[in-house]
Length: 135
Length: 103
Image (cartoon, chains in turn brown, blue):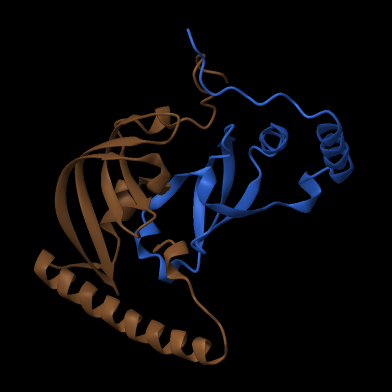
């Protein structure tokens, strides 16, 4: 199972090379692209990447080109099943629309978070958001 | 190395991995590495509606650093053996693994 002196790659991404993958990042972003390269830190090189934004049952794609992603920001990599992708059942919206929808969703979440923080604060709790990942 | 070896004994078992972002994924453990990165095949996402982006994903690689729990079938684990191994590990600490070799 060992594959060279530099890293044990039993769980290596070598099988995922040149495949179309979904990458979920710690900031909540979903990138879809072709994996061209990786290393022991799960740093990744993605080609023909699109950032897909999901809001409700709609999504929108933003073309992003080539990405080098630092491994510490990676949550998971998923192999996209092309056939399931076609039957996905979500509506695709143009970029401007999905960005507007996303902003509205974020504003709503922030309002709820404000109310929650206030309620907790009144009861003596303190929330430190900087320690939380946004995904 | 202990849990790396432990997970290697669980390959081909159905496990549920819960991530630090509360996403929980059930799948067949296909492989694990020294960082406890996990590869799962034939996955089902628990609470699929919250994670529409995972609909088309059948296999995934999960970075070890984002795992909160791995839920295992209890019959797959020999707890006595595991306890024994842990005790031995605690008594004779292994020298730290070198991740980089110098030429």
